[in-house]
Image (cartoon, rainbow, N blue to C red; front, side):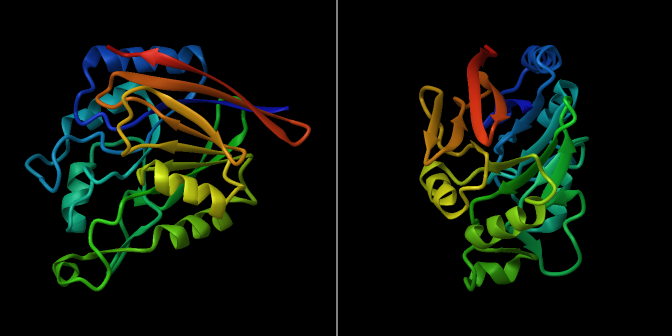
Length: 242
């Protein structure tokens, strides 16, 4: 039997407190879980006032393993986006963002991490398309957006043969996440953001689990997954942070 525990947050919008970060750290350690986020941890959109956003340092304290680049982490120049997220000691992920030249520095398309139980977890991020391909605004940016469907397919192809668990950190919203499940049913879990549900939503759609915590660092979702005889089973509970 292969199993893994995931602790999931999304859409914190710079509301994570020191106390909540410590609570996440404790829950993560007690459950030997991978702590991950699905984007929009940062509060300000398209602003680079600071070299790095203060919430990133709190996420380091909590012990995050990875997060997706959301629209709040996005900046239309690569340098600005890297500055906003520069303090992160964890993986920053977006499979559908590519630079015009060079690479994206510490922002990667996907990553492989080892879970505490030794299983291999393949993670990739998906970011909303902030600049439409071919638009005049695109000429001002040194970043391009791949179609999310194409980017997700590339990520799954790259990770599928290596990973025991294949997980999407998606900031696309629930409607697109359901289309993602239909497109790539081999994804084990979608940890979603951008939807801002009033109540925690955990759904199983076409055999794939999808999780959507409430926004503003009010809570996290702890999910334990196991595979037995080819079938995936899960248990989940909400962790209050406020």
